[in-house]
Image 1 (tube, one colour):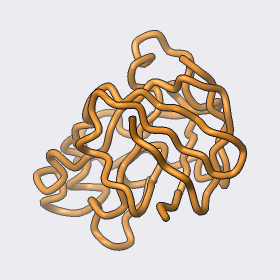
Image 2 (tube, helix red, strand yellow):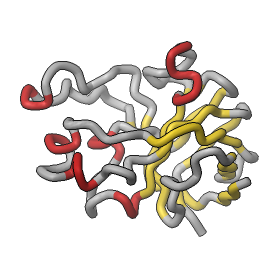
Image 3 (cartoon, helix red, strand yellow):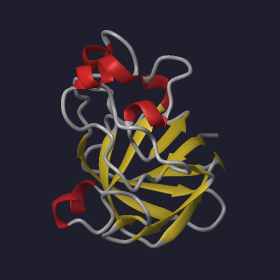
Length: 156
């Protein structure tokens, strides 16, 4: 069964300026045990929540298997880290996740391409290594809650 390994809802954008300058400090509490998803808006408390320019990309998902061991969401700045579910080829589908509080459907719109920051936050060579495996950008179709732990996943 797939598992939600980590959830991130950060109120700030930490990758500004040049990667060689390093990321801004992480605010306390951005890694959480659950998130509240709002249809068409994203994750409550996240930096992209309700932003018009990010409606089709307000929730991001990445597969743990795409990352080097020990790498988490703080390094890659996605919202949902999921194990046991390859997500990078789901473009154009609807991914439904249910971690126990009811299903949350996510329309998978496009890939979440890695950037040069990955060489700083993940490690040298990560930017190239993550091309095609940087996760997906989604629009939430339902209100709901997602939690860390086992998750039922369906693709339609």
